[in-house]
Amino acid sequence: MSNAFNSVNWHLLNQKIDRLSIPSYLKVAIYNFLSESSVSLQQSSKNYNEGFPQGSSLGPVLWNIFIDDIFRLDFGSNVKIQAFADDILLMIQEPATHCFTQSSKVPLQISANRTKDHCLAINYDKCCFTVLSTKPGVGNLRLFGCEAAAL
Image (cartoon, rainbow, N blue to C red; front, side, top):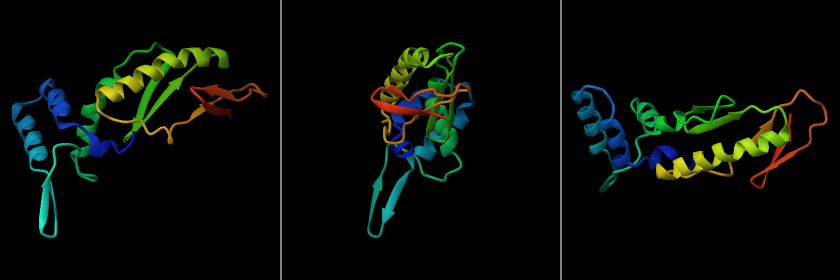
């Protein structure tokens, strides 16, 4: 993701929080946490209505709530989704590279569309594809205009 924690849309986040089965006092505490966000620099201050502070204890929880539906996407048993902070990993298992090329198109496109639905941007400079193979001589794979080197 590009600038993910700073780009979280509060309106979308509040909609997701509203759908959670948590006590209303916790929802109010989260809304208060978000609504009281501001930055003060010397003599001026600015209120914010998106993102949340880096390093806050609630930030990672809010991020997980915000992107939870991405992890609920079902692409079949050969595709797994994992994340670490704002880095999302799609693991696709296929018996041959030509199968991988075909089977990766839908999960990658749906994931890209879902991030757009969340008003987030993918940082394509950070994206990479890696082919893990037990067979020697597996050539490089070209996917969506990017090279994927075999390890």
